Every structure is written in C-alpha cells, then in structure tokens.
Length: 123
Image (cartoon, rainbow, N blue to C red):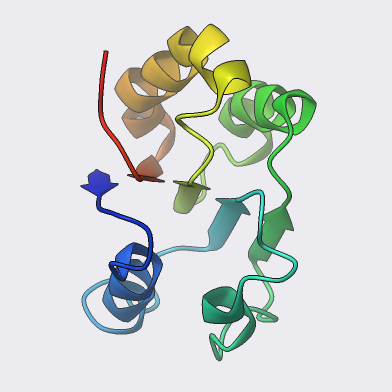
C-alpha cells in the first residue's frame, strides 16, 4: 500500500487509525522504519507504540537494508507489517529502490505486508 500526501496532511495518523480499526490485531509484528520516530508526536502519542511486537527503527540506509533483507527470514510465518514512513524519497533509499520493490512483490509469500508513506511520488 502507498500513502502519499503533503507534510502535515495526516498520513501517519490515517495509517495509525487504520491499525486501530480495520487492521486491529491483524499483525503479530509491526516494524516502523522512520527517520523521526523518536520525536514524531503522532507515533509518541499512539497508544500502542510500546506494545509487544511494535519495533521502531530510525531510518538510516544501513538499517533499511538490514530490515529489508532480514524480514523474509526473521518474520517468516508471522503476520508482519513493515511501515516505511517518510524515508522512501531520500537519496539513500532511491539508490536501493530495488530492495523496496523486491520486498513489495515478494513479501506476500512470507505473510509480510508493506505500507510506504511518502510526501512525493516521482520516478
């Protein structure tokens, strides 16, 4: 799933609302990859941010690659959601876009869902 919108448009809140309603208790693990996770008030105020199974990873290229390569084995056999929030447009990620595409197309075979939140969509 891809969620695109301007800064402050409510992309993250929209996603968290979906996790509390339609996707409530669907996932065993939620992995959030976000450069601002440590001071993002939307995540900080989310009631489930400290729940077991919610894994927070600041967005650096090294961490994204590690997560994208490891999810197929670490989370195999579990219902896992990978959230890539506002780091898909960074230059480092654009260099590795093939990893995101590979994960998007192959993750369903491992019960992994991917949601990307970004401010702009361009080629």
